[in-house]
Amino acid sequence: MTRYATKALLLVGCAGFAATGAGAQAPASASPEDIAALRAEVEALRREVAELKSARAAEPVAAAAPAAPPAAQASSPPAWKGAPEWRDAKSGFSFKPKGFAQFDAGFVSTPGPARSGTVGGLGYNNLGWNSRARRIVFGVEGGLPGGFGYNVEFNFAQGAVDYEDIVLTYQRPKSPLRVTIGNFFPLSSLETMTSSRLTSFLERASFTDAFNYNRRLGAAVALLDPENDRYTLTAGLFGQEINNASFNRTGWQASLRGTFAPTVGNARLHLGANFQHRVAQRDAQNVQYRSRPFVQTTDQRFVDTGLIAADGDDIAGLEFGAILKSLHLAAEAQQVWVRGYRPGRTFGPNDGAGGGLFYAGNPNFRSAYAEIGYYLTGETRGYKGGRWDRGKVLHPFDQGGWGALQVNGRLDWLDLGDRTGSGAGAAAPNLVDGGRQLGYELSLIWNPIDYIRFQAQYGHGSYRGGPRATTVAPGSAAPANARTFGVDTVALRAQVEF
Image 1 (tube, one colour):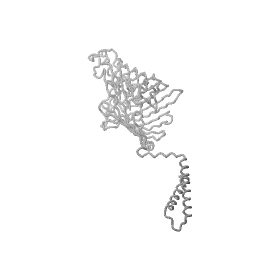
Image 2 (cartoon, one colour):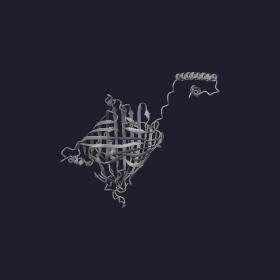
Image 3 (cartoon, helix red, strand yellow):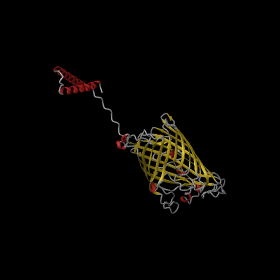
Image 4 (cartoon, helix red, strand yellow):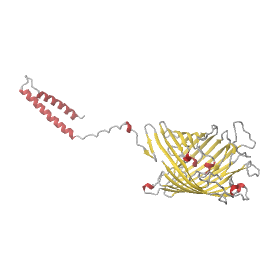
């Protein structure tokens, strides 16, 4: 309250009191002169009050302070990142529903001179055209107070519930240390650690399928570079898959992966290495390596080692990647050393080889791929945390543009054959004839907007040996492990994310 208002209130009070006194019946002792003086004083006070009111009205009025929002409106409205995300910065809680669906259709040719499958060919109904829901994933992710986070995903494709990433994480803001516990991929390669929503082809490189890279229950500790994203170093210890129905879950593996991502001129590089030591579970001490022909619209494997009696294996891999504006390059190589059992090996009452074949030595298998991709519409492939990430569509279809258009080419090599003994035999114990697969692949990817993808690819597989070679070419004079044939594949995918 200003000094003018205070004085005005005092004068008004005095004036009112005086007026009341003047309006009342004057005491008998009051003289006419006293009454006249009192009335004159009241009139003077009234004039001064009027002047003060005029001065008060001329002063600028201060803006009223905004009212505090009610408690129900303290949280900010949800942000949209493909789906609504609720976040409360004060408490640390956040919540975001998410999911994606992939629908595939494809064609796999029937190898051999006789396509009918009666003579010199394969008679399998799931060759030719087929379709499937590759993945239908729903989940949630978010944060909790104290640096904790969560990610839960379920896959409902094929009419059954399967498990994707189901993890609890801990990482304080800007801290280089992150702990992950739950069901996730065990640090096996650049391809494996990249989400299937963002790969260059419908399926990851052949070694992902052949070397049995699946999510496992485990824990990992990572050293990261949260400020510049230049390096990662992660070590983990894992048990069996989360959906392993056996009560004997004694199989385990230890994994280590490191990446370095410097910027050299205008290029962002990725250099990485990974290693895994895997132990088979006690009741089925065997390993098996096999792969589909670049698509999963068939369950046929033209390369397959069959079961090998073994304690487990060791795998080492090297990784390379580069991004230069709209161009990207990628290449990886992996080697498997099987710790096999020799013929004549006996097992205890709680152990078992599970029907695997015994070989004269330890088989070694290997795989590699090289890839090149280019955005015709100017985009750049995303990269974050030692893996490929989402790129940004520059001219979305809903804003009058054509979206993002990318072309990719890949050579994919997988060798599942190895001679383990000095004998001339073409089978165990001297030779593992799992076959060799060399793939030539092309893909075209169209993202009309960030969260929609249409993908088409062609692949030709050149095969040598393997479990189907004698069936495809029964009249060939070449040894079984040297007989060759080819398979063509065409595949399409429609994908939506939220």
